[in-house]
Image (cartoon, rainbow, N blue to C red; front, side, top):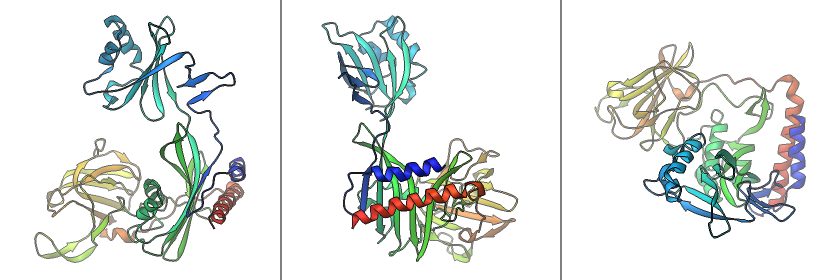
Length: 416
């Protein structure tokens, strides 16, 4: 782990191309060869193939295309097409071919233009390759190298974390990542103007300029209601997790909420006017208003003890987390395909989707929690933390933490 900390520290020394502003972007020198490159003899490579004396022809998959049709349209005989289909079955799933996906042929530069390779794109980084250069068809998978670009951002929140990150021109999925990291420490339904954050993160690029995704958060400081929350990534027992400044795990037994960035429409109450029945009765749950189809997550590890239609509650899932706590998720539009009664679930696993089944005026999730069989306010559940950094790794953790803070402070100073 000390080597990891040193790497972060020396990466700080290698940073360049910093831009002024609230958001700092830092590019760290590539550690891998990119997908297209020229070797020291001037030969051009793409998809890991030397294409110096070959032509590349690119195509889009159209409606109705499948491997057999594609190979036939490329001019192969029926016998060869069948051989290509059988050979490619291990690396190419016909069911996953979608309209607009790309494929390419790499051909000889002569009057015949014989096809030497066929390349199917499975994603922006992953490809299936059919090599026709030998006596038999050889198939394999190829992944383009990913370049990680280190970035830094800090901002004061004026409306929401999502809006602040989006206003900075950054992929707003970073907001989801931050909310996941601090899911227990901060109630993101209660983030207000005046809260602020500082975040160090990596963005993944392919083909040098094509941004794929936010790769990871490498350091985070979030100020909520004048209280500072720190998140430092650290690996122990081969598992990467986030810890606070003292080395305590940020991963708790339960998440704060079972879905992301929605509005609380109704809170826990012993006497609430029912919106349909127009009578006062207990509402022992939290109603989260959200669009139909919004994913609903299990707030903690447990076992599904009920799944089905439950009268006024509509489509409902109940999860028993331990000998003390059970949770219920009601009015679901549908259940996640893999969810079955009796199966174990993990914290954060999608179990269903927001709907309005049962007695409901509109799409929302009625989320309920029970302690020893009695309803309790889900917003007031307390839970012990997971294991902290092990004593024998404490020095490594603090070394890494100091390196992260040093990098964040350095980038902050460059913004001034």
